[in-house]
Length: 184
Image 1 (cartoon, helix red, strand yellow):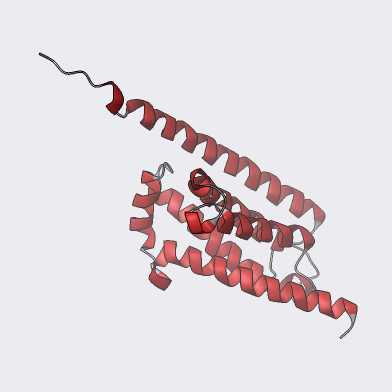
Image 2: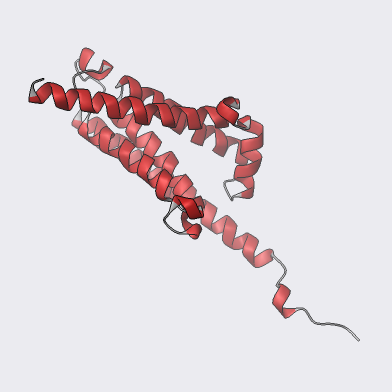
């Protein structure tokens, strides 16, 4: 197998594996498939995690994962797919970050790996065995990479900043159990 073909087959394998995992996670949120809870329950959980409004946040995360994953697997609009999936995974990282790095303790290792992998493929491109290649890379241009990742970064920053503010507000409103006084 020629060097070029090895690289292209490797990119295909990465895209299919990563895209499949991302699609499955998104389908759990959107449709309740693969043991997921569906949009309403996921929206309620996301609201509890500080992503408000919850249902719209669940829809955005589900579309970023399922849509980005499907497009990555197909190798179609690869920069936008990688950027969308990476942005969705940044939200998941923010939820898991307080537990540290390693997944076995509830940390952010797994969503970070998925996000970095999606970003890497979005930047590197899908390879020869892709729909982007078949369409002459019309949706896989350097300016699309720059635009997609810029939009994803700005949207992610806005969502995470909003979430941080809501969580801080909740913490301030929570009764301080350590400073209770008893009345005679």
